[in-house]
Image 1 (cartoon, rainbow, N blue to C red):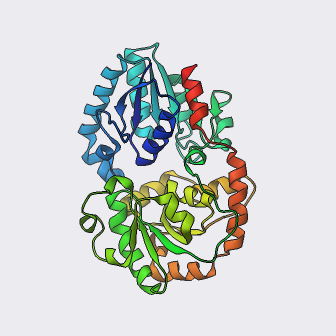
Image 2: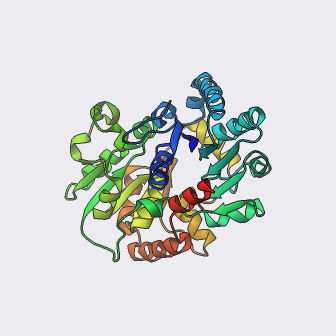
Length: 345
């Protein structure tokens, strides 16, 4: 069986690698990067941050989309992961050229946060909709299936009790734009926590590259780790840029603060379009599961050294840990094996 896949995000690519374990006989085509093979393009080629960065690469995206449509004619089915701004137009183009081509969407767009009218489009152009958040499934009125959450496949160790010992982990994101805005703040926080062992988690795809050029000054204050899960499991606390890593820390059981700074233009656009009380996925899940805020969110001007240190000292870690267990129970199970079986059918 040939499957055309598109995993533009580093996190999506990790989820795809878990899926690959259950589909050994599949021939993969498209956008991905496994340990032993890579597609026509990889997630590194799509590393952009914010609306202005997207505009700079608009012609590249159009070129890739046309190539993907052409490849769709050679495969048995199509699997698109996350990244709705690219994948919804791609699905439309594929359906126009190949009306009977089976297209599945895994990791659905956040219609519960913005652009709810996309639901109608998704139901029209995708044959299968596989969600990873229980609360989003009813929005599709019987067309979507809760397939499980991929992090429950990938996380191998979860804490059974709250530890008071260990390191302090810093995760300033995977995109270089995020790193440039947040890492200097983390450096100053690490200087204040001089008695602690500070660990910088670096995305695995930066391994072998010049980290000083990527992160800049202050790298010597940290022990570098390319293993996010292992570092979080050994840590007593973490400072994390908004993203998948915040839910990863929650499921592992490590208390953390979500930290985020965006470009002013991006902040204005997001605040105009998205109506959410929280941006952290663990907080969003907790609210849908009947709980309150599980972790602090320090965003924009609040993401500063003084506030980070203040919240670090005051955060109720016991409450966080109890709510983290509730989120694990709410998500129930992983997704890779369920998705593999659905694709084979």
